[in-house]
Length: 213
Image (cartoon, rainbow, N blue to C red):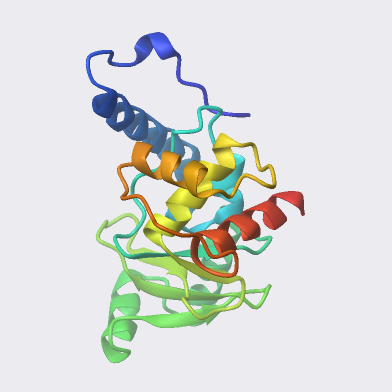
């Protein structure tokens, strides 16, 4: 089910404030959706790193997108495991290794330069770090070079996702005019060209193919 924000709730005195307001509400919506599904003590930001989750909970308003991707790049998991399944598999592996208890976990991280990588049932790789929350002290995200991981610049992915929502995943819309239109609305600088084999062109093509599967 899409996430709908009633237009009468929008601030009317500033277009910029409108988008800030929508971003904040949508991020809160995603957080509420993901928290019950992720078992303790794992912290996994599905709205940042799980492509199926991001597309599934996309809103009907094309400009409503999470605004909390990492500053430079975002690593996206494209496999079939759900966020909850990923967390459970991590927990099971740590439990088998005697590393689930916080002190044992911290000791292992200290001996391994602060992180290590686990391989899950679908052969995807996940970086395991210490979280900053006492109840969710196991922070996980896709390994940047792992199976089922795509890495894009944050601005590239955000542009492609906005374009995807704007035109409902249609083909033939990857024009400079359309791309710069969504970039300006997202607070990004216009670009001078589009290359279909890389950057926004490649990312948008991947979103189209992924949505069709």
